[in-house]
Length: 251
Image (cartoon, rainbow, N blue to C red):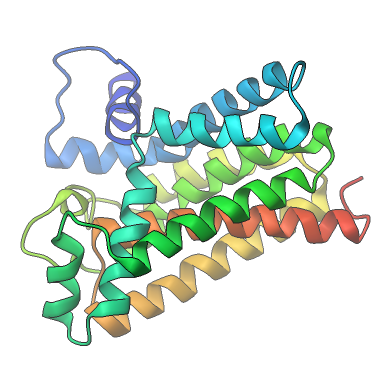
């Protein structure tokens, strides 16, 4: 189990882990159960950065430092997926053309705009929250965002013949989803029960709608699609937190 946790951390972050891990396709699929826990680690790191930096910097600057940290610690893995997916869906009309654009390492106008909007969204939404709530939502959002990989991988076939996402696709089963969901439920204890319910609703909604869109356009999904769902979930939860705060439901 510890080995699979290390595999999950190795796959989703740049954190150094034990050498000689058995990163076979089947083991990576089983390690997907720990993807939400890897999200806890990333979110907790961002929360720590925010709390420490806030002692010397204004709140928006502290939030930006936390966002930069998460992009650095994950190698921009999910942001890259978002940019490629938006480029593909925005520029391609057929499945083959969408997949071709996604595979192109160059970033286009759609992808650039998506990254600008997603970073601005994270920065503005988090900066609108009280400082005491920001660190909680960093952990919750990063955990929930990585949970979306599990149901999407179990639900949709992989749209390519090969690719990183195929290493996880269809290797995820009920046990992995249950284990990942337990992790998410435990993290939701950080926020009030109304906020926890809203988090579950928004996370499920983004996952379901994204899955329907991926299935309609590609008859499946790719690793880039998983990255896009991850980023949409994260920023969607920050927006949810702002709405709850303005409605006085975060107490």
